[in-house]
Length: 234
Image (cartoon, rainbow, N blue to C red; front, top):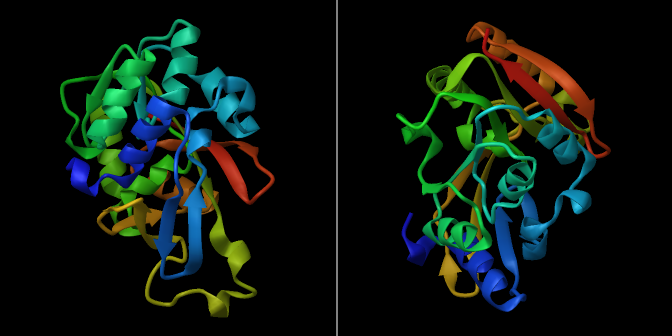
C-alpha cells in the first residue's frame, strides 16, 4: 500500500503525532456514511471491549497480530511478556507502531507472509478475519493459517453476524453471502482504494473451518451480534 492511498495510516500517524485527528470516513453501498473514531485505535487494555480482553488473555506463546493498526493489542501482549509480531499493510501504521514501542512490526499482507512463523497464537481482532474478503476466499485464509501455525496452534478472532440487518431470509442477497461488504475509506484528502470485507456468522465459520481440517470453538458472545471464536489447528 502506498501512503497516497492509506487513509487509516494517515489518521493513525496524525493522532500519534498530535493527539488529535479528523474524521476517518467509511463508505459502503449498503450503509450510510460512517466513521471510525481514531482514538479507539489507541485504546488501552482496560478500555477494550470484553471480547478483545478475553482474546488477549487467551493468547499464548509466539503470537502474530494481524492488521495491527496502531498496535494496541500488540502492546498489551508485550506487557504480558509474550513474543509478538505485528503486521499491517499500512506503512504509516507500521512506522507509528515502532514509534509507540512495538518491538516487531512488519509491513506485510497476511497472505504474503512466509518465513516469519510458526506461531502458537494468531489474533485477528476488530473483525479482522474479514480480510478474507468473501466467503469463497475464506479457505485461502485457512491455507495460510496451516502454513503459519504450529500443531495445536490457535487463531483468536471476532466477527459479527449481520443477519440482524434483515427481517427475513428473503431480504438477504441471493447472489452472495449476506456478510460480504465492500468499503472505501477517506481521511482528509487521502482516499483509499475500494476493498472487500467479510462478516461471518459462527456456524458458517465453524463449517468452513471443519472442511479445512480445523476445529472452531465459540468462546463468548458480545452485546451487538458479535462473538469471539477460537480456531485450532489439530
